[in-house]
Image 1 (cartoon, helix red, strand yellow):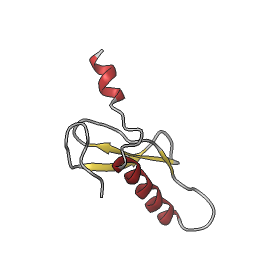
Image 2: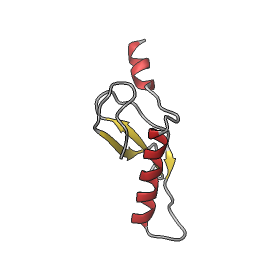
Image 3: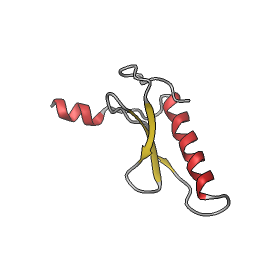
Length: 79
């Protein structure tokens, strides 16, 4: 499970599509904080469902470890 948002404390944290169909990242429902984009496997061994689950788990792990978290869109809106 994803930890609460380190910026606002929100517990509704979801894994969403990244910039392209191959990427996923965690996003806070309240403040929009984002974790780093994680590449979703799209070919090779396994099934698409397994690849998606692996990408989601990797995105949550990166979020929980505080890697690459950003509030970029909020910072640009304030300037």
